[in-house]
Structure formats: C-alpha cells, structure tokens
Length: 372
Image (spheres, rainbow, N blue to C red):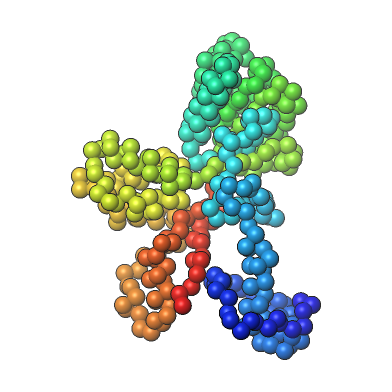
C-alpha cells in the first residue's frame, strides 16, 4: 500500500450502507498490513476499514445489474464460470441461434433441457414461417433418434438400419457428418466416455472431427452432463454453458400446478415453500420435494426443510446442523441478536441459496444495511 495517511472523515457521517466482511489473513499479508499501518500512523482496524470502504467504492458499487451483459470469470483451477449473486447464467435456450459447433451443457435435468430447446426452436420456426430445424438425440441405450419430425427423417437418413446400429458412441459420432444443415444433436452423458482412460482417445477425436463440418453447416453437438471435465484436446474448441437454477417464478409455477393436481390449498404457505425450494438444480427436483411434503392439510414445512437439508448434504464436505436452541437460550450478545432478528424477519429475510452444478457452492447475500 502506497498511501501514507488515511483521509480524514467529514464531520457529518455519510449514511452509506455498511457491509459485514469475514475473511482470513495470511501471516505474510498480516505483516505487510502492520507495516502499512505503522507508516500511516494508525492501527490495523482503521486501515482495514479504509481498505474495505475503498474497495466497495471502486469495485462493488459498480457491479452490473441483472439486465446488463453477464461478465463471467473463471476459477484458475476448476475453470468454473462464476456469476454475481442474482444474475442468471446463460443457457442453451439463450445461446445465439445455437450455432456453436461444439457445446458442453451442464444440467441436472437433460430431458427438460431438450424439451425447452425444442419448444423454443419450434416457436422460432412458426414465427418465421420456416421448417423447424432437425433435433436429434443419442444415448447408449436407445442410440440415435429424432426428437421432432425433421429429426426423425434425419435419423433415418443417417442410419437407415435403425437406432440399434448407432449404439457405439464413436461410430455414431463418425456418421453424424451426414447430419443435415442446421441440425442440433444432443449427446447424453459424455463424461462417462471422456473420463474413461481406455476409451477417451477415439471419443475425443470423433468429437473434434465434427468441429469444422458442423461449423460450415451451422450444426451443433450439445453434450449434456451434470459434470464434465474436458480432455486437453477439446478444451479450446468446446463452449461450456451451465443451466441456471429454477427462479422463484419457475418454482411458483411448478408448485402451483402440483398443488392444483393434488387438490390442495396452500393457504398462504406458498411464499415459505418457494423460499425453501430455492437452490435446487432442476424443476423436477423442486416438484419431487414439494410433492413429498404435501398432505391434505397443506404443505409440511418440516418435511420440506428435511428434504432440502438432505440435498445440501450431498455436496462433499458440507454439513448442515439444525440446532434446537434459539436466541432466548443465549446470554448476552444483545446487539448481534437484534441484528439477526432484523435480518431474518425483514424485507430481505432469507436470500436464495445458489450454487454451481460442479462445485456446489452455497451462500447467502449479505444484508444491505446494519441496524443503527
């Protein structure tokens, strides 16, 4: 730090939001901060407060809003794309015309992804009065098959002997060079093939061979996977996208339809149920958890939270504790207890849990202001 003095605060303190920060300082950084504080004739608390306020003023206050273009960054080790809280990740439906030749799409519900993409392409074709693009799908049990009428015709042209002749993944990828223009091919669970040391070479080569041909004919190979580590020969050629978690509007639509089918009145419990179901990776998971918690009397929030905690515990190294004690059992700390009551019961009560498909990072947003 090159500054020698800390700017003098104005006589009238500004009413600006105060943020809570929790961090860990290494020994090297601590020694550097001590030297900087001594040079500036202040203590470490004043120096850290100044640095935090400066960082928020220069960086955090200038973050783009949800309607602006996303600016993802990549973790240096995991190469994950990280987005600010509240921003929606790009999806295959929002990809410009879906014309990238090779796409890896991380999703918890491949079937829902295919249905949404098919619906979008059909709607675009109807608005333009054009023929829908061929949509095909491959998995290791059913082989190559079409998901719409043009896709079924394309599948018969590619493999006249039927889907059984395309069960071998390397052979299927080899014959995809016959796919018609503008085709979209969904390839299920490539992680089982690309992470197998015995068979990764032919699969990776077959995928790479499609790159230039698919680019010329505006075709796309979409590799659907819950988690995928690309081999070195494909990292620079494959675009990686991640499906966004269901939004509160999506959850509202799902639980309303589920409750209506079951003939159950939510009786004002919808807001709590939506808040509890935030953070699931797919609408199917939301529907299943909500359906298991339904009864003739309404929604059992205890069961809903129990299912949510079980889902959180699936993440390696993450443990969730549900203590029975409350603030009344804690002596002292009146200021912190008052703040937490305001935080939990205020307008910004409990922020949604968010996490990536791969690393399963869960967090809640800090409050905007602290109580006076």
